[in-house]
Structures are given as structure tokens and as C-alpha cells.
Image (cartoon, rainbow, N blue to C red; front, side, top):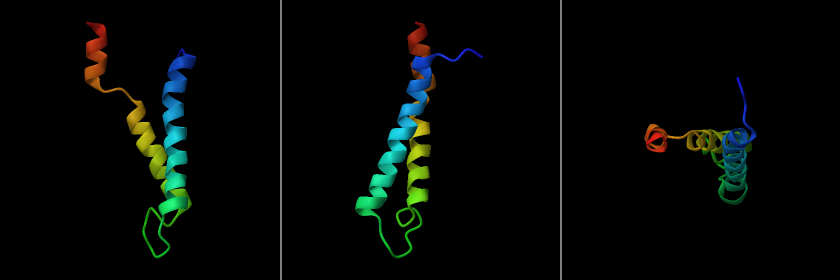
Length: 68
């Protein structure tokens, strides 16, 4: 496999940024009484990173449009 640095940054950067935003959400807004995601810094960070991973992958439509 040939890894391109630009492609790697496009994949990793949104995951890191969204993970950081998940932690910031926990820190600023999170609750203390049993909210499953908001009360745990690890869960909110992982949840944010998963959302970033989902957003970092292109949709099928954008692949088809770039070929035309």
C-alpha cells in the first residue's frame, strides 16, 4: 500500500479534531449525574473521534463526481 501524506492528513486530522471537541464538550457542558456519554471524558472523546472518522471518509457520490 502506498500512503500519501495528504490523504493521511485528511483522514487523521478530523479524527483528532473531533476527539478534542468531544473532550471540550465534556469539560464545558457535560453532566455529573449519570449521562452515559457526557459524564465520562473517555466516552465523549471516543464518541467525538468516531464521528470524526465517519466524516473523514468520502461518500460514494464524491468519488463518482471526481471521475467525470
